[in-house]
Amino acid sequence: MHLTAQPARRTGRRDTEGMAVASFVLGLIGLLVLNLVLGPIAITLAIMALRRDTPRRFRALLGLGLGIADLVILAVLMAVHGTTSWSIFGG
Image (cartoon, rainbow, N blue to C red; front, side, top):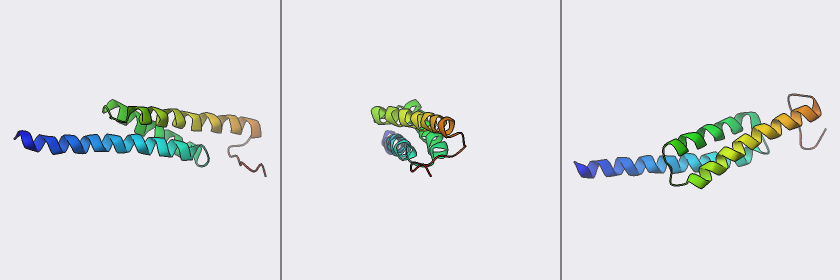
């Protein structure tokens, strides 16, 4: 009976590692595109990974920071350009 609990624990741990890495990657991509969508997803995944005690805690914290940065950058660029969208190329 004790042997069956181990694989479930490892799977759960792998899931939290995946959440932490996905949070980091989505937060990083969100700095360039789809800030409004990818930022909140990165934040949510990071919080879920941290609450589930991920072994990749630093990566989850980076994802959380990048997700927040996505939203801050979007807000600043929207305020500067006065629109609900922005472009790197300034068209």
